[in-house]
Length: 202
Image (tube, rainbow, N blue to C red; front, side):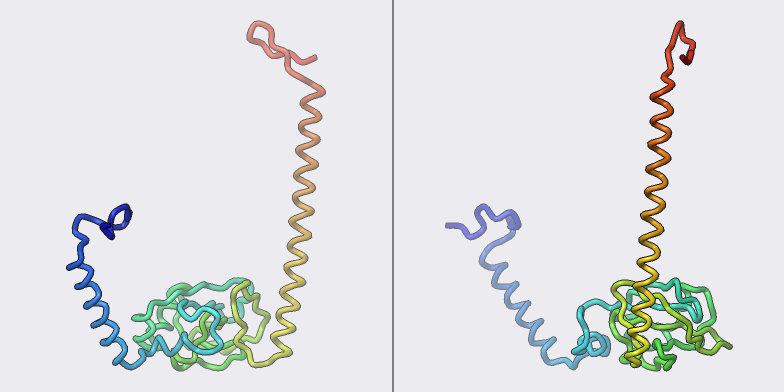
């Protein structure tokens, strides 16, 4: 029986010779990659504390502006160019002159190896110092502070804010629903009747 018969991914070029060549090429690639040292970007995001070791992203706040952050997604080649290059990419999002990138405790990030995937950081423009204000972390962000009490406090504040937002949204929905019901009731009690192209009301 032909191996490729009924295979939707096969083509007229598939045969035993092409399979053999593909296997040889894959084996050479494995041997080549296995003999190389781990690249810098691989070392960053394959740490034990990483939930998604293949995702290269961080969340960045602008100094003192805790209600809005930028989602930054990096490629390996970008990370391998070093921290200065990464800092410039982040600064472009905010259109500021970058001074430094710090964690949630205000500690400077000097090397890309210090970055944590999905970690939250603060961009400090030139001439400013770290403002230890309240920062609203997105759902998937990891608090990079080493202060457990501060992390818990920030999380509790976030939960309270989300609850207030939820109550406000529910209240707004009820108001809109009530207004629609009143509009429908008024229209049904005063229907339009058309005579000879003219609209008359009862």
